[in-house]
Image (cartoon, rainbow, N blue to C red; front, top):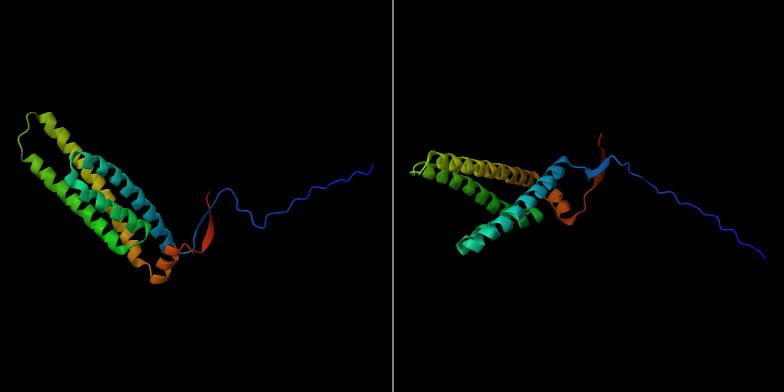
Length: 167
């Protein structure tokens, strides 16, 4: 009886990336644009969800869902026109919150506590809207600063990457 002995061999991997490494694009403008794009997509998805809940009670507010969808697809497809529409919506939303805050303060409230609670709620909503508008503006600004070749490489997904070590 002859026995065949099999010897196990291992093939080394050509290039291993250490565990504390992140792969990012080479161009800093592209990194900024892509990261802001993720932020705008997440924010617009959250707005779509809450706007859909609002539409259930008032169907006339469907236009807010359309603006939020414009923001999502503007960030997903790196479309300047859709992003401008979404930025205009968020900017007008900030202005309307300021107007509502002024209008509410001119009304008579049954108690002092209800006025304070209403003012605090509207100021918090206004601060959130200002922060959202700031993020959308940063994305729009980084999108405008890209040249056509960089924008095309982002849309096609053909970016050159480099490792960045995290300490």
